[in-house]
Length: 414
Ligand code: AMP
Ligand code: MG
Ligand code: MG
Image (tube, rainbow, N blue to C red; front, side, top):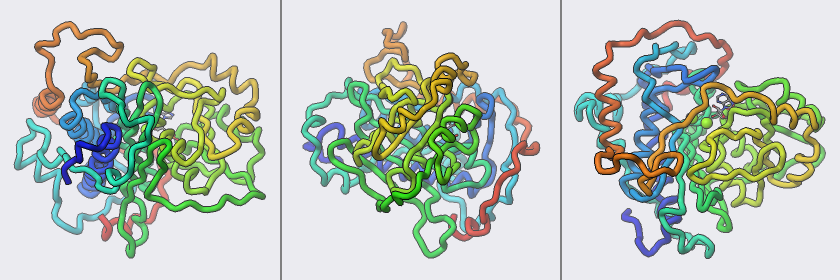
């Protein structure tokens, strides 16, 4: 449907983000079905796939087209992609393709690789979102107050290893540095249950609520914590052990872990180390706030999501639906000290930045604004570079070996 211009800017962005996240989720499923994940290593234990790249092109180009004055920051910097070797294919058996490839292969071959495929541009809106009244405090927000943080595929390590329900698409909307709206799209939700529709979209706005999921009642006689399965270390483990949990759920993705929280499956998400970035936490934080929860760093300090903040959440991540201060008080002193002095994982990611106010990521006026490229042109250029670089080596062995997913279900569901 066309966006109702009488809706507030924030509600129109949330509404468009729901539609765009559905499109990005389809792209992520299509790349998996096609089978060549195009994996490159961005840094130590930090991967990027064709699904990350394509989903980001779709989200950033689509939102920029509709909201050209709004700043959009996305995780995936593609500038280095084409001079690094493809690392490895997923080691699990890829699903067979059970129906003709739709979007990705067709668009790249038919529309020409020099353009973002037309069907990557999603200009639709979610009517469900627009039917909700905008909270008063967001009614008059202007473009220049907003930053959109995009993690096109959260849980990339798990995506490459076949833990598909850990994967989410995250679009977070910050106003004056506060996370106020968000979308968490889970492309492979229910993929192991053939009788159910695959994928779901959860969205929320502070002081309005969050939608698209059902909430369970947490058992009071247990303490269930969730944390990283692929980026854990001794400090993470020690922060968890200090709480003496009855159960620890180790899963991928910040988005997925916050889903477990809002669904009432875990009491807290603990990540007492550096590594998570603003695009990992903006959407989850907004949705968590919308249901009365809290997300801070391990010191209990609120994150800021303005255009000039550091991408890295240097103080770790602590998220809860209740009793947040209790969890903060239980973080051992030596864990906090370690967070203060520990090094960031290298390289520090900057991601991609499109500032609506024509400034660069640091807030400085760009030197040559009159020759500045539109994002579509930038992306065209990246795609052209891809074409010019001779084929990268592909298909070496994956270093990891801990799959465990019933892949056969994918054959029929994808
Ligand atoms: P995880 O819980 O391990 O899935 O991490 C949540 C998010 O933070 C994912 O997007 C990860 O890629 C990112 N992340 C966490 N730790 C690191 C790290 N050491 N290096 C790179 N990314 C990280
Ligand atoms: Mg992420
Ligand atoms: Mg990501």
